[in-house]
Image (cartoon, rainbow, N blue to C red; front, side, top):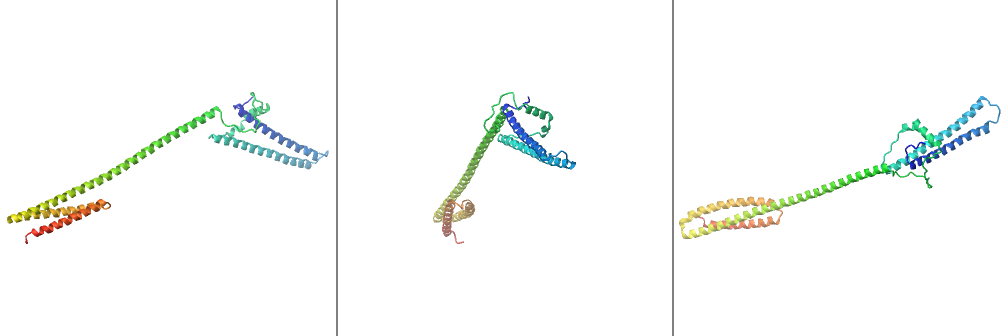
Length: 298
């Protein structure tokens, strides 16, 4: 007996479908037989018939039989489509892609095996427990297919875990790089601010030193003027040198003011420094006015 290489459950499903197909086929054959019986009872009531009458009866019978056979073939094709739809729908749930070989449907050897299988009245070697409920397609839980699916799912899960781990690593590296960038920007700003403060402090010290020098020169000049008029020439030269130095420092202060104004024009330090420089300029002007009182008329 041919078993077509299926297990008991699948072979039982095949038997159920063949029984269904046979019942539909027998019903259609009975319908065809009734067509002939109806023709015999309704038309064959006379002993002799003309050729035209026989042709008319055969044409009518042909039309009826053709309609019945065509209806059965169409119904069989549609039934097969519904059966394939159930199988494909169940396969899609397990991510399987089924393929069919249409050429095998005309394989005479296989068709003969099916015919032999049908003649045995669908008896199989092993007893099968027929389901009492409405027959349904059982899930694909056989060892080979299930194991293959489990391996594929495990493989995809493993790849997914690797991708997630790599994504977390990249996110960590990105956050670390962002932190490093923020720290570098903060350090750069601190360095620029420190350099600006140091430069401003050095210039302030230089101004204070010049003020002390001017004050010392003024004091020496007054002392020398009262003590010895002959030293006026030397004092005059010192004063001229001091004036030149003052002009140079004033020019530097002007440049420094412009530079500081660019760097600190948005800060409170800028305003404070500007006030200091203004006061220092006023003081220098005051000193110059005082010095001019002691210069000779020429």
